[in-house]
Amino acid sequence: MSILINLATVFLILISLFLILVVLAQKAKSDGGMGAAMGGGMAEAAFGADTSNVLTKATINASIAFFVLSFLIYLGHVHQHKHAIAAGGALPTLPAALPPASPASSIPSSPAPAKAESTQAPASTPESSKK
Image 1 (cartoon, rainbow, N blue to C red):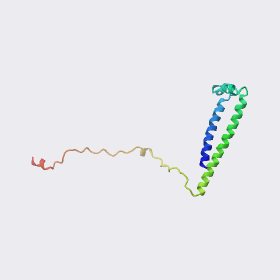
Image 2: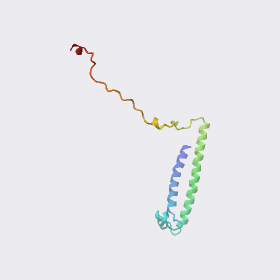
Image 3: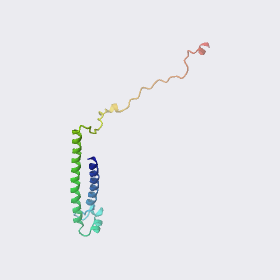
Image 4: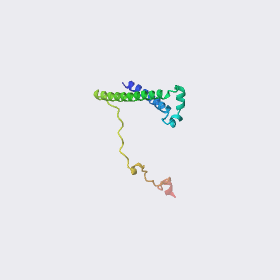
């Protein structure tokens, strides 16, 4: 089932990219704006004088496919979730969130500076007592 969901997700991404390109290629009603700037004239040259009908039909079909495929992916996830619960399998869970840190506790505390210790030998060595 997860293979079908992954495959449908790839198709959904492709359809969404196609839908974006088709919408940007259309001319605006005022014959200016983003439609002309993003290739509105190019689409008319490629598809002929009846470009608006072709692009409108492509937009409608792509948007219907987008919504149907989105709903099918949603139903697939719901089906997968219900069967995982019914089978008693463990669902993948997110790690538990850490409690929010207060601003004072977010600053790491450093230990108090230690007193500088001398590296000299102690005064009670036998050689120092002879002098």
